[in-house]
Length: 381
Image (cartoon, rainbow, N blue to C red; front, side):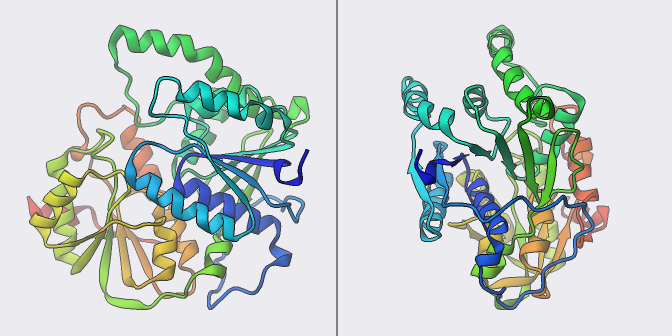
């Protein structure tokens, strides 16, 4: 086995790849230079012991989605990973009838031979399929945003690994597909829950406020790599808004969302709107016309964009990953991160029953952020 194959990372999004780089940095911290102009934050979340380090260069397999924005960010992140000395391989697994099978055949030997496997999305069906082939002594889960909170919660309760915003549906064909796939999903879940009995070490490397269930080790991701490589940023006098894809996932009503953004922009004097990579062009065009905001489509995850700057002295977001990650990435810069909760009246009829509780939990558990009053978005109606 080559040295680079000892640790294999299976990555599907730019944020996952960023957090793989953070994991590698945390395991090899003694070899890194000092932080540049930032004071590491003092999180209140419990952090488990450091894993042994340093680590050899990683072999990172990118399994890209089909949307252009995600693919563009992934290519930029892949370049950063190569600059860090890691091997990056681009493996198409979507976009064609035979693509998944071809990718499986191409990855089979690597997945079975790796001694450590890192994944970013345990909810991904393709990753779940690959997990059934894993023989590694160590599994690492890095953040794919707030989905990590749901992963921990479902794993602790022994529930199926289904995304929080999925309300079901698809009729009889959808239910048949779910039943047919259930053995694969169950086998993947047991890779995490039965780890202690089989001697496999399972680690969750996260910025989220979670408590590891039995059989898992929890380690804090404080964005040390990001802070050491970027910034500190130049601060502008204005406020920046951060977009969300809750409309695209069918959770939030589009008209309600537009009204909320318009109210926030007016109240806080915002001039820029950092779009989520999955927000639709039509929605962003409507937001720009209704609010006058400059729409920014980042070419890297927002943690890197904000750290690189320029960035507003206040960053306002709806409940999302960034209300947990930006306080770490921007520690010591003087930037205030604020969160505006989702009004339950904004939810669509297609939102899952868990959506309200989950989104409230994302906002309530965020540390070192300012919470905006609930009436802030009502003035636009």
